[in-house]
Amino acid sequence: MSYDAWIILTGCLVGITCGMTGALLILRKMAMLADAISHTVLLGIVLAFFVTQSLNGLPMLIGAAIVGVLTAVMVQALDSSGVQSDAAIGVVFTSLFALGVVLISFVGDSVHLDVNHALMGEIAFIPWDTLMINGVSYGPTAVWMLGGVFLLNLLLILVFYKEIKISTFDSAMAISIGVPVVFIHYMLMTMVSFSTVASFDSVGAILVVAMLIVPGATAYLLTDGFGMMIILSAAIGALSSLLGYGMSIVFDVSISGSMAVSTGILFAAAFMLSPKHGMVAKWIRRKKMQQEQEQKASA
Amino acid sequence: MENMLELLTNANTQWVLLGALILGFASGLIGSFVLLKKQSLIGDAMAHATLPGVCMAYLIFGVKSIPLFLLGAACTGLLATYFIQAIVKHSRIKTDASIGVVLSVFFGLGIVLLTYISKNTTGDKSGLDDFIFGQAAAMVKGDIQVIAVGSLLIILISSLFFKELKISIFDPLFAKGIGLPVGLFNGILMGLVVGIVVVGIQMVGVVLIAALLITPPLAARYWTDQLGHMSFLSGIIGAISGVVGTLISTTGEGLPTGPLIVLCASAIFLISLLLGTRKGLITKVVKQA
Image (cartoon, rainbow over all chains, first blue to last red; front, side, top):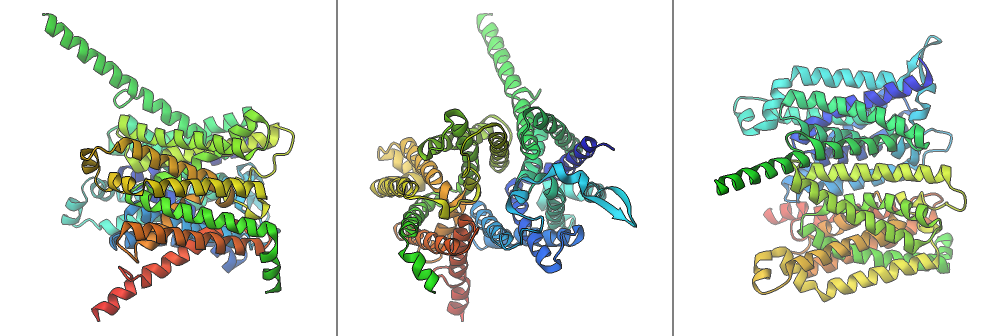
């Protein structure tokens, strides 16, 4: 595959993986918790590096998952001790993220781990970093990692589809019929951490937030169905990647930044033009109602 | 230790520390209102959204001028808060998702503009990167003056209108009843938040400045129930964090200032969470025993 094709494939995988998970977060009103986790996994990655002294994929995934779940646990604990939930999120993620950034500045220059990389990612270098087994190259490591996380997320969603759906829409009912609501919650948090760390290399810790939240929010404006929303959100994520890659080529700017901006463009389009929930549709409905009322009044 | 003394007698360091002190106090003070109004994360979104504003100011005027940067930052910061409210008002999207959408898209735009600037313009553009995490070591006396004057102004305004702000947050209906223009005071508070974010981004950076609004009042909450005491204490905590964080950051090379200030505030929060006289975890256990 050519250089550009690998980058496009990576971008699409990021969009699909994060989009899918993100749709669930929007429905469960946990968008900002996802924002928090995608900041704090940086700490997990740095700690994994200090322990193993390498940027290997698996320890990074484990480190990220631990810190990701820890974030959710700490927010939950503060929340139940009486701190407002948004302030709880704010204090936890800024602390852990700040710790990650400070620790990163102790990592030597020879290692490919610095703050800029953590923020923006370096998708342009993805195709060079290939998976080598016995001297044979099997394509970029990032694609394998993202592909793996994508399949895992897909599998978990399919297996626990009913449980996730019930606990999302009616958690009281879910508890009463014996759905393990707490397990589902932390499973989703782990999925978010995995998606974040797999996307980290390509789009950066902070711009992952765009892929996690915006496609889901866009899909929420377009459909009322649960399954449909997950599919749409993944598709919107992939489309944003394509659009963003095109934009970055035309203007010669950051690829990950452009992808984040294009999620915003698609969101704005849905916000205005969605057939059911869009501004234009609402405006037309209002006009029609007014006309009908006027006709009634004159008749 | 000698290094430390040398640093403390350095005139530039003294200026930077003074700036950090006043900035920390002002943000802690404003933060206690933000906490009561349950708008902690809106402050975060606003802070992220200032990045494209700084870049646009550079692109439009072509010069590195702190006042122009801050003007740009204020414009996009306010625009972001407007968008957050408009999305919630005109669609089925909830507040937290709306904050997330605006925050990430504005920040993405900021990154895009940052790379555009570094590739397509000539001239001195160093220092724009510093707005992400803040770099106190790179600041000069003029920058500090902007921070100090801005922060003092914010402290002054919030002290003058302390009672009015308090009533319009706690009990808007009562405030309206006694003839207070609640809308106006909401606007003033919004302006103060934008102000503190904008003057603070140079020192703390856009990614973490919100922590200075969130953490100190949360820590202060564990020591007192009274808003007046809490605001003052929160200001003190902010000031201590500012000074200690900046001091550590200037001793080591390449240590980002913002994250260190935030870590100091977090440490104070942790101590308060455990030992606070009001609701501290250990205090509770001791009282029960």
